[in-house]
Length: 194
Image 1 (cartoon, rainbow, N blue to C red):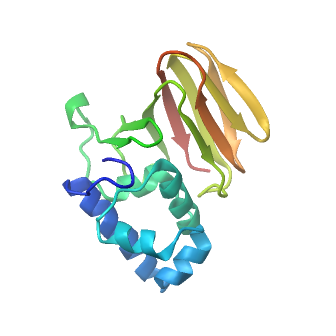
Image 2 (tube, rainbow, N blue to C red):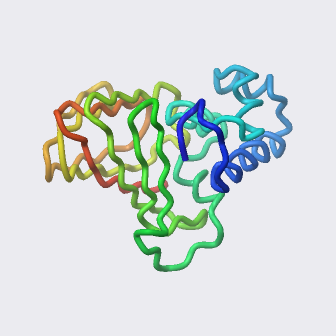
């Protein structure tokens, strides 16, 4: 997948657009209702649901918060029933070019599982702030930095990670991920539902 502004021409993006429209319809919300809840313009939501654009990481985070689900759960919902083993070449990869973020679903995603393993890569200088409330308050996250330097701010505290460091926290409020080094920051994220 690509970031907002790109044409949504791949099947995964089309499934994401359809799922986002379904979630809104299931709740009986109009586009205006969702726009107020997610603090996103009605026109952006309309274009997103028609697969004319692909969401940025920040936009997808706002929508996930409005729907009360983690991003990993939303992305798992648009996948076909997963096999137990997912080969590297078959893992879903989402690119947000505007923010410099790449997300790979490493473990087989499934809506009924409590945990998921994700690989994240931030290009040098990338700075992503998730300012909206977490989609699932108390979501447990473990971040294991493999390469580069990463600053993660959670609970008002900034944590500087070097390769091999692992940060564990529960998600209660805004977070920020910033690549502080001259090379990409590559990390493993373990997400565990409360």
